[in-house]
Image (tube, rainbow, N blue to C red):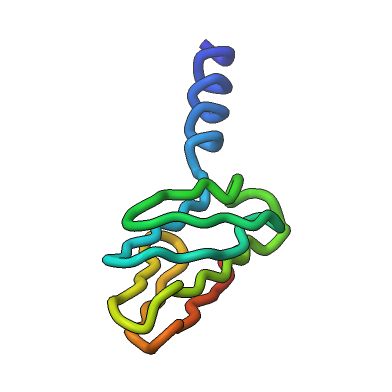
Length: 91
């Protein structure tokens, strides 16, 4: 029974990933976990475990003058500015 309880606890803790979802009607570029990324539209990134003490930081910038860029999930923010930037961190 102890094994079952320990396994359930480990499974519960491993499911606590920090995630950020990029939502946009345009293309964008950014930095996630120290790596350059780019895309268009919607994309979700897993930033690692919430139990890790290191901050999870992201930065995204629109590639266009028009449109919106929004972050949702554990890091939130938005912009409609021309070539606007959204950044944030989660622990």
